[in-house]
Image (cartoon, rainbow, N blue to C red; front, top):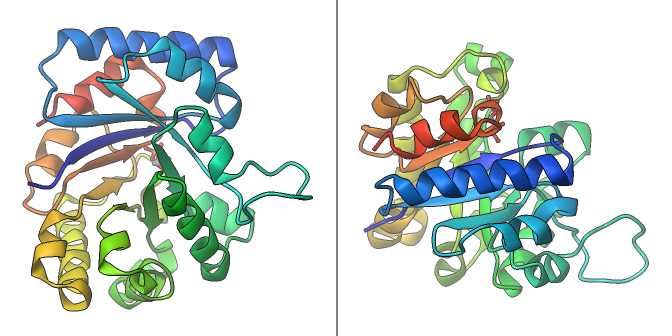
Length: 252
Ligand code: 13P
């Protein structure tokens, strides 16, 4: 059975102290809730990871970085390598988020290096894809997402591919309050699963966790998560409040 994953992406929010408090609050709520069948991940800024890892129960809460370097080590001022992320106790790394592609010039070439280093260091990549509004309006979202996958994670071996999760985040739904309709989200995730089946076979496709992201909240999560191909969510704004995030975790 593929894993159900609810991952928070805190983006560039919270101080270390605020982040630790938030993580503790999520931990406390998850401990009381019946959420055993959901893998909960907190995607924190690099600066927070070690403190957050220490503050939570690792059997309930996983911690992710939101990025890692495209180089293993060396003279790359300001970069944080996959090995460094791993050494904090983080288990996951969000890669290819549209904000990184758009604002920091992350190309498929760069992402291939990051994914390879994340996997080589035993981190689970949560690999993001998704189209801008203009592409959706031109009804070219399927071809666009297909290219994003073909240029990157579809180059992996089936064995490596089976170690990652995918998050489909339509850019027009991120932080806008506009959620993709349940039908739009399900349609795209089923399409992605079909592409995986064509490339790696049905068994791999059935085991791949594919998440939806984009204005997902406690209110719309139950309907989204009830869809056959939606295996959870990558959550921005609603992951910054413990109660709201718990509402999504318990939406199954
Ligand atoms: P919001 O949930 O704030 O729309 O953000 C989604 C996102 O980008 C998560 O990575």
